[in-house]
Image (cartoon, rainbow, N blue to C red):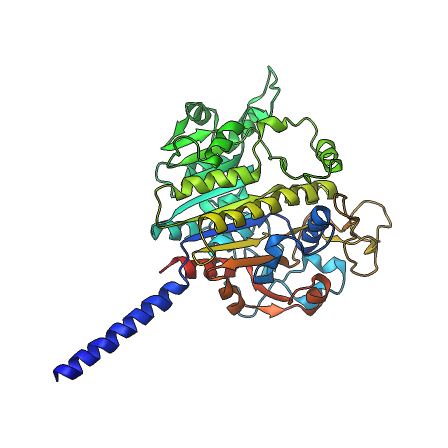
Length: 489
């Protein structure tokens, strides 16, 4: 009996040991999500042509998971999405450029609020909602789940700190436009965030002081202070602290924090000296002088000496999140102005913004390989949606010469982005100045990355041929579910 007892105990111990090893094998210490806002496949190819002169050369494009992702949102209909309803049908999408915004009775083309909520909350919602269902019920976000399990959380962006994408990672609000209310949640005394970085400075734009009119009306003043939750709140922030957060704003402060100099605070709000957007400080090609001309041409009246790069901000955030922290973190980094460039149908700005974003991904890869490992960190690179209906030249005949595909124009065929060589803007044709339902790229590497391949929703054969990948795609809500699986022991 004793022998059987100890044999049973032995088997039990072996089983428990095996279960512990297997159970923890897919548990990530760190998760880093990088979102190129508005960066669809063709925008990705355009940026890669500009930076490298050929496709497929970005480091993250060699990640073991390289697939597509659907991004549609849902309507406000007071019913759950019926089984099998999807907002992306490859057979419909590839019929004509006019089908780029396909939808159904229950789905539509997403905005950044709904897509960010889907990515970080795992639930389809209607446009405008931040961390809420279509009927305004709060959703538990992946950042909140991570913090519940002992991790730290932070967000970095090149657009205002409480704009839709960082907001969808951090807050709960029925309307994305309530920037002040969202910011208040992000930096409250009870906030689960340790890092909030981005634009929204009420006295600077592109690194230069804003010229404020002597007779500035209340509406203009309110707008200027909106992202930091009002003038009174800004006065508190100017003291250098707010609700336990250290507040920084100068390029030197960001660079010192990125380099790990001095005392690293436990919590940081970093407000770069720009109200609306941070230009791509490192968006030029270092060894091609011509590309600096593109920056100067497209970002006039910019004081580059006052502004940190997105890479610098990201390293600063990583230093804060890893300080005295053995449990790990989750960090969302957004290249937010790729979207702005594509809304404006500006190819040069788009590739410059993309280069700044892709260099930041390189920075993150270097950080993982130097300070962590792929066995404890998961990195996901994707987009919230496509913007601009970008295709190659002559995809359609712009018969009324207004720069978008609309009634009266004739569709020819989907054509590839034209490679004009490294350091040169590629040839593209914008079909619109809005969002579409096109697939966006999704790359993943590190612990748990293979879980994306277990959530494949379909295969788009035309996309596979057109963009040289498997054609397999997941949905943006799958990003939440994969990350939750790897951060919850």
